[in-house]
Length: 84
Image (cartoon, rainbow, N blue to C red; front, side, top):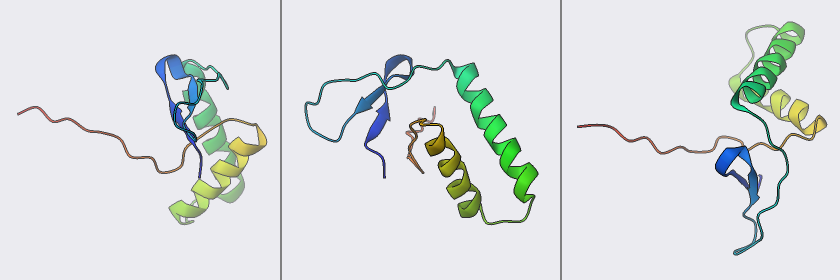
């Protein structure tokens, strides 16, 4: 859905075109991001309560972040490295 990826220091890079210039969309500290996530989730839970499918909560969360013009990526994969 989104063409953005996290870069160094939480800058967002537009990766929709190969070789596109890096552009700063927003810069948040990890604490700021965590606070925004918790506040949004608390608001959603206070309004809708428990028992909905995860996909419903995800859709509402994305709607809330879109209203605030906060860039996000849905269901992005992460690399996990295990020690042997």
